[in-house]
Length: 290
Image 1 (cartoon, rainbow, N blue to C red):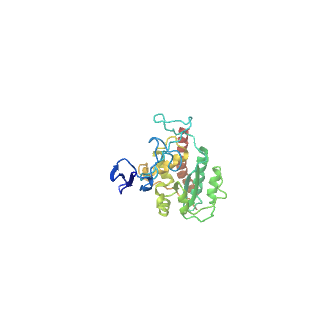
Image 2: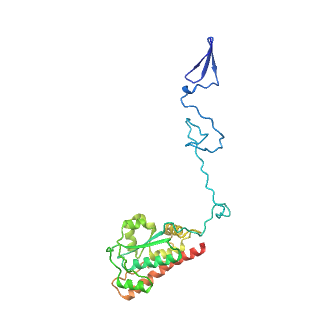
């Protein structure tokens, strides 16, 4: 009579021969008796899985978590400049014209006097330095849709070398604020109106003259593209509101609608230096990064 093999509840094998039972300490039960399927043999523990969802050599059927793929950083071309001390890619002054432009929204009351002028002065000045990197638009808190600019404003535009013919007023709406990376208002009252309409816009909403006071204090991002640089500035400027010189009492640009030529000139005297500050800041940083 040959030997008989039995497996107990402890999954340990016993050999029974001629009435004597012997425990086979190192024996494993057959696969059909296992609570879990047998584990496949693994390769080197330092090996990286190669194929399949778990990769070759991954343990299957175990209660342990499946082997994780180790993602290797992409190999950079040899001509990419490296950081001198850490070997990381260095930032360069080159920038991609295909990147989404930095979006500036200019806000006044009727969108037929101050904001159309500021929009065009800003867009033209920034385009000379960084073409296609900025998109400036405007709207009015109480604008009548499709109104045209006043004759006085059209004349100012003509004297500065551009036309506002065909410009149509647009009433401020939440969609304008959602799309804008930076909001510049002509008055503090309009800044409050913007924040009332969309509280989340507080950190990126300033009066034009306020932002011009703050901008020189904000540390620029070295070697960045224009859009990266301005996204960084828009995020940091909020911290410098109270550090900027002045008390904010002169942060408004006067509304000239229906008023004298002298008031229109005062508007320009208040608006243009602030716009020039923004444009020259970008010109200087662009020259440094070039």
